[in-house]
Image (tube, rainbow, N blue to C red; front, side, top):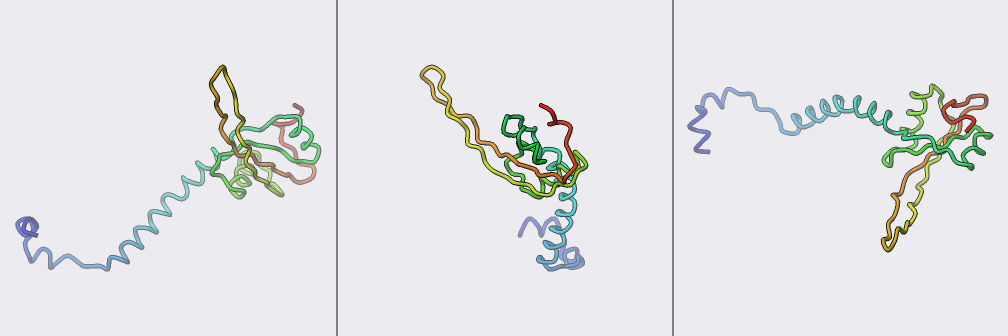
Length: 136
């Protein structure tokens, strides 16, 4: 406190308004979440869908209006549905999410493993299609 006494005079400290720490923390937190929430949602929507998964099974699912996408590991069903709606302009009826285990690979004497990844099966309304994954 000796350093502060030299810098500030005692009457300068008495004139500053004193607010409760809980109120200051609550106000700062609410302002920070409002400021961070909008860019956070936009960036998560852009990066939620990584790429469409094009396999024999996913091609068969297209007949049932279901499309398979590799998605960001932290993305949940709601974020994936919003990403489909913003990217393709179609609101999905249902979103299913599952984890795909990485495979063990052997190269010479070395063993490795491909990374685990998250996939989403998106069901679209009847009559709606996504042209990116069509006809492959």
